Image (cartoon, rainbow, N blue to C red; front, side, top):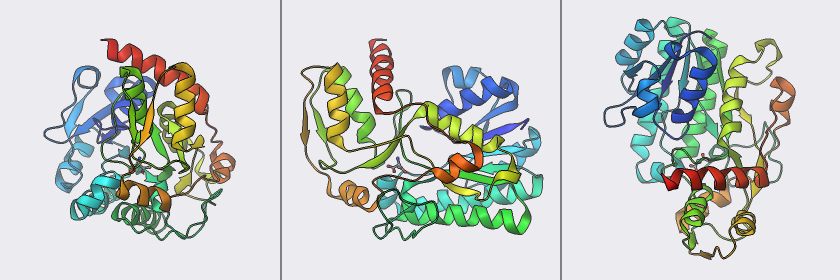
Length: 318
Ligand code: AKB
């Protein structure tokens, strides 16, 4: 990898991944792609080049790829699960029409492409415990349908045209930097903001609902390590299961309460979020990722909670 374009550099993953990639490959080699209204600011804007890179505009992508001699694209443009249910056409336009543009530009310019899938690619009839790498994927949300399509279309471009496509199925991502917007797993971030602000947390997900989660440093490492992995060792390509922990609301609440005595939580279940959460796995089997490219998480629930509380407390003081 020499020259990298991040599409969606100001989003939840992009804002941190851009900085990590700049550390690893050099600031001038990583272009922060953005859309009007979501321009990079501060460190992201000052730390390296940035360019308009709207996933729905193939010609614009092509121009950026040529201008910066891009050889690797991290395509992070997507709507999260709950917003996608409210705007299904837009979810498809960004997630799939946009992916088509990215893959075409990649095919014509010899770029490798990372486009994340998610635990949302599974559905109600997927085995929920230790969900295997290769299993039933019949999601009933537009988000899930677009994620399965992402995996298949990316595989197709690899087998048909030799495009170096790779991806993981991200679980819920937890970070103190850029908040997620409109996902089912957002509660696992929001709960920390309530705890640090000294507020009672109103939990939209029911007691006992387990989902896979991951702390952002592990997620960034997963994306970067997969893109650096030896292709000869990859049996799979798109949609590697990766996980770091699996918990229900009461588990993360207890972890936080141990460190923030007096913290309170009340359940007010959101019907849409709950239905989506129940259709997703309780825990993933990520052995294929471990075997094929050496994946391993560094943060479990306790280490993540400790770090989140410390970093978010610092951040909210400013
Ligand atoms: C969401 O909740 O929509 C995402 C995801 C797990 O894909 N965080």
